[in-house]
Every structure is written in C-alpha cells, then in structure tokens.
Image (cartoon, rainbow, N blue to C red; front, side, top):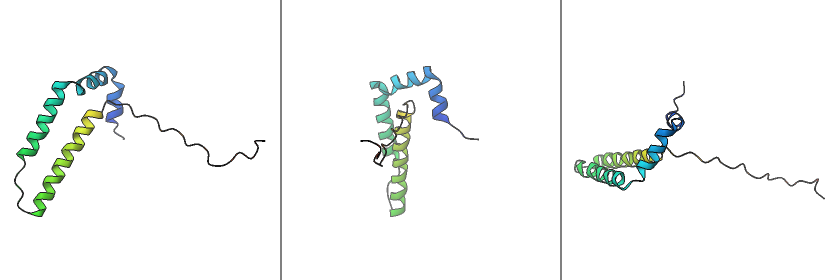
Length: 92
C-alpha cells in the first residue's frame, strides 16, 4: 500500500484552493512566523555539542515542516523531456 497524502489533498480541489489562499494571507504568515520564533526561543539552552546538534536538528525539522505546510497544495510542474543528444543523420 502506498500512501499519497499530497495527491489525495490535491484531489480535493476546494480544500487545496482554500489552502493556497490561506498560506498567502498576512494573518497566517504572521502567526506562522510567530509560532516558529516561539518554538526556537522555547528550546533548552545548549550545554554540550550533542545538545547543540539536537537543537539544530529540531530547528531544521521545523523549517522542513513549514516548507511542506506552505507547499502541500502546489501542483508539481512536469519535468520537460530532454532533447535528443544524437544528431539526425537523415537530415539533408
């Protein structure tokens, strides 16, 4: 069984359209920025290299989540097929 959450979400067009409108709204962006900053400020102090690494990975994970949240309703653009690399020797 393959889970396809993004594909399933995009199939629900009214939800995807509402999400696209939401993520560009100023109130949502302000709330998202404040939440991310609050999360970073709430992390414990760094005492060792190991805890510093753990805090970095928590912040990196939060950033990845934000990117996923902001882009879940975006349609992936099809990759264009590359041009053939061989010359057509039949052309005169």
